[in-house]
Image 1 (tube, rainbow, N blue to C red):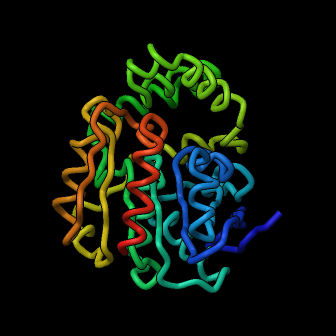
Image 2 (cartoon, helix red, strand yellow):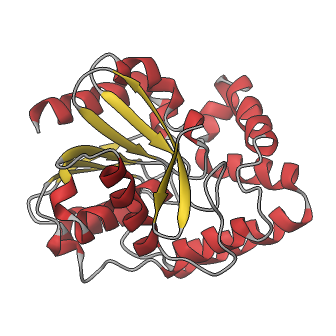
Length: 266
């Protein structure tokens, strides 16, 4: 099992594919689920590096609180371990967007270009309230928590026209045991809610594409994406209408093409 000593933990990672390096950092999922719909597609063009964030999967889970700054430093340590600089970075799935932004802010030499998906500069009170409910549900019943989260990441149209997709998503989320250590989920949520890059986003100098779902995404939709786009110098913006938080699943072909086109240009 490949592990890298980064910061104060050992981080699990995996590598597949061939071509220039592409660091893929995702949300609340282990490495094998990080944009898994596009695993083969991306591997045909890039050497893809996926990982488990601290507190998740096979990576270390310290008992003390952590921040997205620390998680960004973890990724810099992983790239050091792999002896890589100036790589393309795909940050998506919510938390991955936050951490990728911190990597670009704190370690600019590591990032050649950035695809910033489902991110935010700072969580608002609405999202903080939602995540507070998720913390309570996670303590109460993980299967119930997984069903609740699934309601927020897919559109009603997906539930109505592709019922197997949300059902499978909820089952997978509940069974994966993404946060094996006691308190790891709560510390991860706390790191998300303490994230604030409103004053430092202007330090990002690499070419950046900000991506999100449409207004159906109440987690990290246009209200956040437009702020990121406005604060990152020279950033471009791509909103995928009629999708929610999991826009990379609901419009998988369009999203995959968007990613490949962006990195081919940058």
